[in-house]
Image 1 (cartoon, rainbow, N blue to C red):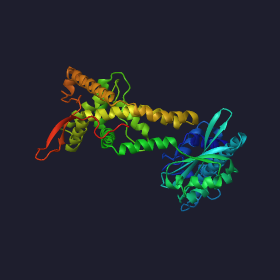
Image 2 (cartoon, rainbow, N blue to C red):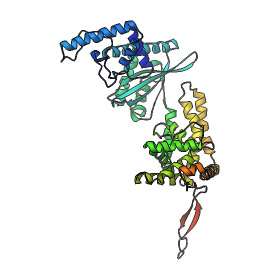
Image 3 (tube, rainbow, N blue to C red):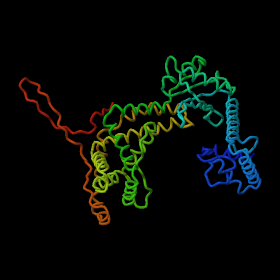
Image 4 (spheres, one colour):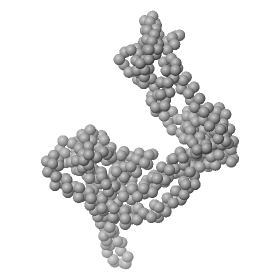
Length: 453
């Protein structure tokens, strides 16, 4: 039994699934099919453990005899194996209870006061679940512990409140010692009149409600990007470029070959796929392209140009590559990318610190208070200069590529150039006096509707 417990603890600690899609019947354990991680690990350990091997042989033989006697039966009867899903689930419940008891002892040993964080999300089976995390301080500093994950078929504030109260009541943790609670901005969580935080405030008047500052920062960035067309187009371009290359193994191989040619003996990099919720992906994707050292922009230009001229590719792929190439050669794209690189340089460190388990509230408050002034100091002229410098650097690399006999023999000439100057656009000038004809004037375009406050 101890061997089974150790296997259960190992799989749980490594966050590995226990069951598989194959047959888990005891009589079929010695067949060639895959029986899932748990049973396969039992079989692997039995190779070096005579006692476990003897038990496994006995279980398989008894199960086979029972199968031959009752071929239509799907039950194991009184056969005890210690390998069934019931045994595993029972062990997991016992381990979970022991972990919860240990967390409760930690809280009580350090004064009994704690803070709580809660958030809900559907699992792979589309069942809504709420995670409850407690935060407290011991002699070495703040600690965070996942206390429970509860199923919440009803996501109203009242139902969530009852779930939270039941969890702490069952664990003998007194909610009167709750100092702070933090949630996201959903109305059932953070509603001013009937949200979960308001109900907890009534139950524990001394508790403080705090909206997750890291989440607030991401919401602010997301809202700013949604209201600016150039920002929406830019991040769509990042996402489309990564997705377009990843959809075909031929394009992926071409990307790797071009990177090998440009960055000899260096670790290969890929374009980062964008995510609506993970802003670190946007920051990472921008930094890989808009950098003065080993920028991926020349590789993007070369790959998209080659795909757009490849007669073996489909018309749809060539058209898509041509559109992506045109966007990346635009000075407007470079300027917007450089601007967001500077914004992310200001916000990324703050966002990471706000998610740190060892967060210090005083330091967090200082970082937040200095964030807006730091972003406000971003110079549009400086961004434009850096975008122009990146464009010239990329064009120099393309020129060097076109002078390489090895590259020309394999791929041919790259007839593409990144614009290093803002485009000139004609702005209509309405007539101001009676009888005056309408005219227009030329204006340099840098950031369109971007406005710095």
